[in-house]
Image (cartoon, rainbow, N blue to C red; front, side, top):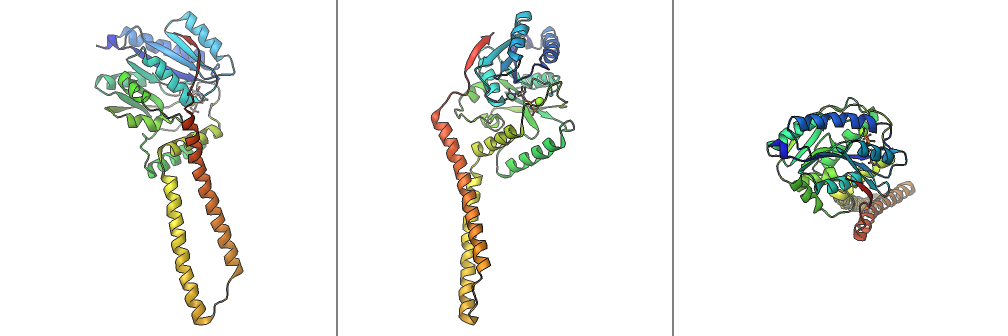
Length: 316
Ligand code: UDP
Ligand code: MG
């Protein structure tokens, strides 16, 4: 049965000239082996998505495509971030493939996970989440921030698969499901569990980058975390109303206490207390406005219905 499964491996690439050759070699071996053992069809491909790289990445992709038609590529008109790049690749692949597997260009995800994923797909899963078995290879900073991120997301009720990066298998059916989500602000790790269908998990070891540096600056990481929270939860808004209620309740009690004290022994007013209270209240109001602003900002983007990406060139 495997012989008929057309697999497209989708790889977003942003300034990856240092690793692209190693990646291509490894993926080529893996794909040939899978095709030979009839695990996948010989029409299967690797699809590189050039996410507006500023280096030689697109030229390399073109060269690789010309040498070996197992590899194809699309070029986005500019850098749109890994989520949009991956989405673009998945939507293009959907037209040709029965299943897609997404992995990072730096091969941090052990590509042998592909075998396990295919196994799960054959057992009936429409989505297979790649989950890293440990975070040993990550920097201390990344480990701590990521751990905190998952805990927080869980706490405010956002369904996410722990330690799952963007490495996953999706069937055509699941991709068609994904296509129906129309939001512009993409947070795939949150959206994909919402698609539903039977899913499974495949464990793998996550290694070091094969070359080059991480393409995720702290700014991109913070944006990404914000995206996840704001796009999937109104918990921050609830927090505002809850703290507002608490503040009002406490001040009401204090007011009554002050009134009683005033009646009983003519208590004096405390200037410091008043100033602190004003600062506290102002701070809270500013914080609240800031959070509301975040949501309005998102709405502003969503109503524009801008395209998530524009494809400049296709090598298929
Ligand atoms: N990436 C991308 N656009 C971006 C940033 C990253 O397409 O704006 C790609 C990158 O080429 C890689 C994947 O997303 O294939 C993950 O990036 P990276 O390995 O730098 O992230 P990390 O593993 O450090 O989280
Ligand atoms: Mg990486």
